Length: 490
Length: 101
Image (cartoon, rainbow over all chains, first blue to last red; front, side, top):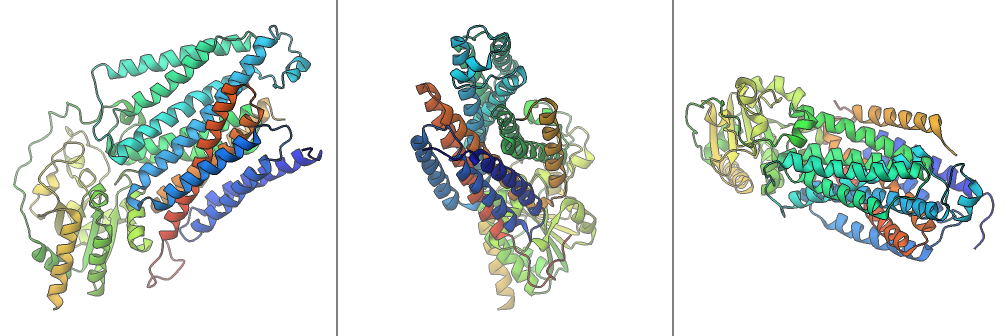
């Protein structure tokens, strides 16, 4: 198949339009009303970019390429359509990991090609372009080479790290995996990867072929490091980890885009890299912890001995009393947490909230930025249940309203409402911004048992004088509340 | 061809663009946005196609196919998941449309 000479220009033009559409699409996603059209625009740009790539001159292996695309798209499409909304965090992690893996694999192919050519063109200083062209390989300068290695490292870490995050969120791996000297072992793995990569890079820059073992060692150690780094991180830290790996994949894509001289990849990858970095910072800040602390802190393991004793006792309430209390309240704030996702209680909670609204109660949902397992997790679940987004309030908006709120209904949230974060400097979560529900007139906490939250910290809220505990599974408890409320009108 | 400082400028401007876009996104859209950017870096598929298209040895072809497969999964999955999430975000009919914090 011969292609017209102007084809590469058309391809470049389409890549440019695609880059514009990506940025335009993401921009539209900053408002709920235009967000849906935003993703469609980005999708149009993506489809066009993929399609024209087939018409780049000199591409081989078109048949396996087309088959791989069809298989990959079909599998992901089916899985993405069918999976339950509660499983979204692990899906995002999985798809993100695939992107990281792809970026790393691109880097690997380019490095293999480069090294194979180096072996055939032994002495490249000064570089003879004709010799390289004869091998059908463009010569990579030292910057391209360095970025190719860096892209492989970051992409590989994002790949295996996201897969571990996926396994954890899926419940296949429900404990943090911690062992003595873990930090040093991880550091050794990382140093090994860097050493292999640096040795190969130096050889390549000087124009000598590097040993295949160095490249293989570099790739394998990078993959292992992604696993080792993610194993000790607990479930509640996943919002930070997922957005960080998202940024990693973006960076890896940008670097490999530089190696391939593909501007669309550079721009899209860099935009995602920056956006993901910002989101990661926001998440870490919402927990009042540095990124380093999340990654290497081994949170909740030991320490915290200085935590204050909490006086008082937990006072239970039954569903009918709780329902009456809220039915005659003026303002009710519902505070969901990861427990609501686990119990799949979002539909029942919204049903209950609608009954309250019908009675004239002002209901709002108060959401902590790191509630759940990914940024904005609770918003997605509530949206799935049909809660209009204007009833949902951010932490900064709702905190001043709590003193005027008659009842706060806490369902499945724990650490994000723990007043200890404000009062006890000895607590591991001290300083973390919280939803200040303790300042409401009454608090009802739906909780499965008397256990502690993820961080293993006692929650002073549960012992407060104005707090009543409604024990039970989130969905069942919400069901009882609905029944009790309906009985009031009967 | 892009090289040297020109590439550095592209990196820098794209990074600022990404930062600015996200800085204004309300918290309720954090998940779709993350998922949307997850879709956007699916552009890696284009690179994977080029890498596979130039591959010659068996090892290169095998890794290239893996790259295309993973990238295709990223692109399709990222799109479907984002679209599904955004479909769900609605406002209440009682509130005036367009009135949003």
